[in-house]
Image (cartoon, rainbow, N blue to C red; front, side, top):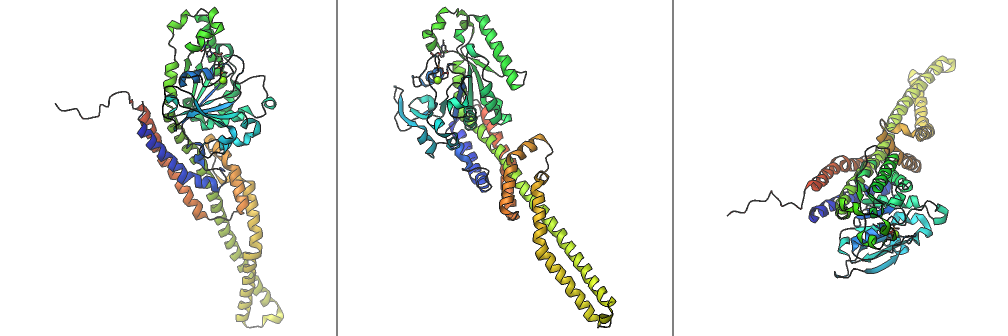
Length: 475
Ligand SMILES: Nc1nc2c(ncn2[C@@H]2O[C@H](COP(=O)(O)OP(=O)(O)O)[C@@H](O)[C@H]2O)c(=O)[nH]1
Ligand SMILES: [Mg+2]
């Protein structure tokens, strides 16, 4: 197992990076309404998704070691339940719910990271709750049990947008379990689409675990292979990939004993298969390490976006400076021409032709100065507003968009750049933005890769093995 201290150390460092360097910029430019770390500062979380009756709650109960969640064949539980550890209760062999809270409390207590879910409205809030349980399984993580997907249910029936809620939870969660059962092995399109749209592409694979559950209910080994094949085919259709991700094959021996279907099944084949429940449990207990991965990706994603935002603002100011210089030079040139023309007009005009040439020069100078002053004051404001409008209209020219990653990144901040330029009229301190850019850039391109390397290093260390680097005990 991972060494808790190493994980905590890295976690603290990552959070400090977000708090000190990314959040101030994110808040200032409207990139986020709440400090960025709000969503990631709480304990690691595991989101459990799947059809109704795929055995989500049973699996959770098995891991917790007690019947905490209601289970049943019919769609029993239509709530999103956060199940977390109760630190205030001394450990006891009897595992039970020690405290229950409703959605309103969860959304308003700053300890919890669910601020972003407020937008889903009252109906969602009434289907959202917290249970504190004294199970040792929860010491380093929290589990989110979800209502099953029901194809027949529409957004109007539910009263909230299920897909969006799942997407938001997936963003917060460090590990996502997607459960299937042999009866409905291919109907997770809805969940998968919202996962694919919300999780960063590069970490999607690492953060999602697929589980074929209730395998004890297959009629025979052939039936199980058929179900497995269907699931693989459906997954490849959805993911658009030919290589199939690892699928954990599991069942609950406890639930199986009482299952009506089970009695009719020929389940001898189960002895040839390893129930991967324990493996799955081990993977879930690794959630704190997934959390580090999640944090590192979080910093990479937001660091990249914020630096793109600042880069566009700096580019605006650079273009503005160039424009100002060009405009001033043109002003000098025009006033010089104007002055020259005035002198020419004076000398060509008979009544003035005889005046002292010094006066002619002074008059030319005065005309040139008058032109220059009006150029730099009255006209300047007008021409500047044309420059500003033009830049807002061609916002994409502020930054090079040479590849798809840059284009995607730009899409996520384009609107913010537009709003900020509009709000400030393009008048902001370039020096300050440059300073912020340097800090974000340092985090994104130097510190984040270092931390990523440390996170990878940590996952390579097998803490179950004795540490061979220790000095041998001398005899
Ligand atoms: N035979 C068998 N039945 C199971 C298994 N897991 C869950 N069940 C049963 O399936 C039904 C639905 O389980 P539940 O956990 O409520 O599903 P959820 O809707 O996904 O939370 C319950 O009656 C469970 O007893 C399993 O692995 N094998
Ligand atoms: Mg359930």
